[in-house]
Amino acid sequence: MKDIRNFCIIAHIDHGKSTLADRLLDATQSVTVREQKEQLLDNMDLERERGITIKSHAIQMDYATKGGKYRLNLIDTPGHVDFSYEVSRSISACEGALLVVDAAQGIQAQTISNLYLAIEHDLEIIPVMNKIDLPSANPDEVADQIIELIGCKREDILSVSAKSGLGVPELLEAIVQRIPAPEGDESAPLQAVIFDSVYNSFRGIEAIFRIKNGQIHKGEKVKFMATGKTYEADEIGVLRLNKDPKLILGAGDVGYIISGIKEAKEVKVGDTITSVSRPAEAAVAGFEDVKPMVFAGIYPVDTEEFEELRGALEKLRLNDASLTFEAETSAALGFGFRCGFLGMLHMEIIQERLEREFNMTVITTVPNVSYHAFMKGDPTKQILVTNPSDYPDPSGLDRIEEPFIKAQIITKSEYVGGVMKLCIDKRGTITGQSYLTSDRVELSFDMPLAEIVFDFYDRLKTISRGYASFDYHPIGYQASNLVKVDVMLNAEPIDALSALIHKDRAYDIGRRLCEKLRELIPRQQFVIAIQAAIGAKIIARETLSALRKDVTAKCYGGDISRKRKLLEKQKAGKKRMRQLGNVEIPQDAFLAVLKLND
Figure 1: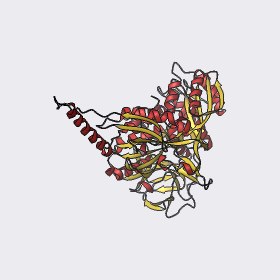
Figure 2: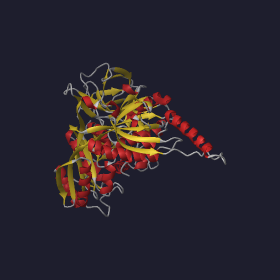
Figure 3: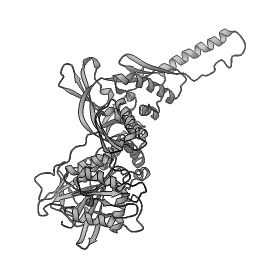
Figure 4: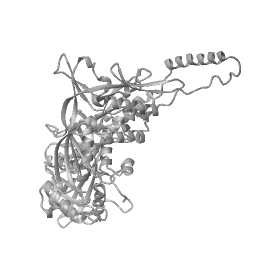
């Protein structure tokens, strides 16, 4: 165990985590020249296209130095706020963390957030300043920011260039010297924590674990403590670029187990594996259940594919434990699932993964957050409202509470005015403002989560020309004046387009939504009335005119009453058509709410 080092790389998005991981793999000769490529650990098409890490990836490297040979287990983590649950799971499997800060951009919001996660788990932090060879790098100023943030000495900060490999040998030496070896008892009963899992269509589910105590042998019977089910360890091993099977793994090791599990629900992230012959008394504590922030309905385009969609979501949840879902029905869309996500990017990624990995074409409804409703008869009893269709009758409603967050925004001082205006427009209250340096300001706001769900992040980036970084965490529920806005087509409510909106903004959003739908819904042969309503009160209306069909073209000459007779006949037909006609709503219309500010 004294030769093992388990560490992760944490940083804000685009500060060079994946590139640094590539250089560490090169320096330890863990990959051959033929296998080398950029973003080596990002094995998803989506990750390569977008240039972001979505999943944390574990890999083992061998490092030889004067002091001996070491096994380094590296876990590369995502940087975006929507994937912070991946980061927390990776941190729980490590003893140390490389805190990577871009020498040109300095400390940003997610850097601070991920650092606090690492400190909570008592990890040894090694500060690393990356991109020092950039012409725009400002190493002295960024070093001062790091010293102020974590209270280290200037000589503790390592300067590297992940692009060129400058400073990487010194970084490897620091990992061996500064990060402690894992603690654990190899002679104790087996306790291994699952922190990730992958579905393999040929071999079943591969669970990735970190052994806290004891040993695991190939072929022995093991028990998953959360489900109580027993399996045989058909194959165990460590994760290199490809799987490397072993006969035995001990305390401190990070590895995988394949035991022919076919059902996705039988493997739970945070579960403890123990031996059947000598079981551990208790599971390893410390894993919290994820709390979704954004909810949206996902429905198959073809209703017969409901079961295929369920299977696809279960396999995705194996690989992404922060996804939650439960079955629901909609009058407009049929059977589907109400899914919980950590943010809008997370929702977008899940939708794309369903289409790419499982060939599922899905319709996603307007995202919303969860609310607490309290009724007049029993004000202490709360009803959880995750879908506008669950909204109780307003006449019996005592109050409704919505989730609030503490937002932390770091930006350049010239953009403070624009950022403040955006946050106040989104019903935010400023709670703090502090200058980190002469031109970098940290702003804190308390604001409703519902207001940041849609376009907040995009607008923040636009206002600050990409210089603002954003992070948030929930602070509880507060009473709010919310109303349910229904959208109706020809007096038929479309439940998938309903939304809970603050009363002050309901009229404006209702009007803009009707205007947007008029552009998106294809014209029919009959007039379509698009209305937004609060209860029985119509607050906005747009009319989509009918396609004109010239029925009088064949009527040439003769009395005007002949033309009138044909037009009256057409009018009666259109009236009947309107009563029976079905309006097809395109997928764009369900996401129209997201683009109301365009």
